[in-house]
Image (tube, rainbow, N blue to C red; front, top):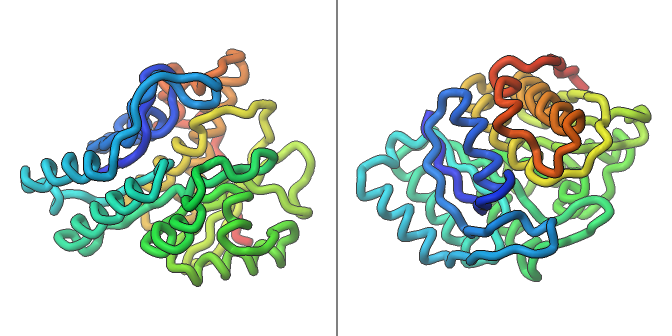
Amino acid sequence: MNILSIQSWVAYGHVGNAAAMFPMQRLGHDVWAVNTVQFSNHTGYGAWKGSVFTGDAVRDVVTGIEERGALPRCDGVLSGYMGDASIGEAILDAVAKVKAVRSDALYCCDPVIGDVGRGVFVRPGIPEFMKARAVASADIITPNHFELELLAGREARTQSDLAAALDAVHALGPKVIVVTSLHTTDTPEGVIDLVVSAAEGRFRVRTPLLPLAINGAGDAIAALFFVHYLQTRDAGEALARAASSVYGLLKRTVDAGSREILLIEAQDEFVTPTTRFKAERM
C-alpha cells in the first residue's frame, strides 16, 4: 500500500514520521512522508534546534506529489502532531485531494492534544481545531485516554462512562476510534488497556504495563493500526497486531534502559511479535 504521512520529523530519536514511517515500511508499505517540522530531537528533552514549516510548505510538497500523478495510488493519509491550525488546514486539503481521486482511501488522525498528568500541551486553538475540523474529517482517530475525554467532553473512568464517551466522539464523525492507553475502574493493576470502537463492535487488548514514559510510542501504534486496518478491515485484528508489536518494541526499550524507543533494533517485532495478544469483544 501507499501511505501519505504528514507529521513532524526529528533527526535524532523517533517521534512523528521518524516513529511512524519505518514500521509501515518494514511491513512492506511505501510511505510518502511530508514533514511539518525538521527538529534535531523531540521537545521532551527541553531543548532542540530546527524549524517549523508552514501550511503553504506542506501544500507545496503535496502538490508536487499530485503533479506526479501519484494520488490515485494513495491508500490512506496519516497525520499526527499539527503544531498550528494552518498546518492542520493543509493536511485536510491533502485529505480532500486524495479522496477526490481515490474514494476508498481513509484518513487516520492522531489527535495530539495532551496526556494524563501533563494536560494540554499544544498551542491555543489546536484542541478546538482538532475537535471541529480534524476529528470531524477523519475516518479513524487514535486518541489516548486524556484526549478521548477532552473530545467527548466527559470522563471515561468506568465502563459505562467509556461507552458514553466513545458514542460522543463517534457523533463527531470518525467511524473507528482507537484509544491507545486506557485505565478505567475495570482495568486491573499492572496492565494497560487498548480499545477500539467500530461498526462491528468494541474490542479490548490488555497488555502488561511497562515501567516507562517515552515519546513516539503513540505515533508508532497509530501507524501500525492504520496499515493493519487498511489491509484487514477488521478493527479487532488490527488492534491486536498493533498492540503486540508495540508491546514488543517497548519491552525491548525497557530492557535496554533506552531514552528513545528502539525502533531499528526491535524491528522484527513489527513483522513477528515476540508476544501475541488477542482482542476480546467488550
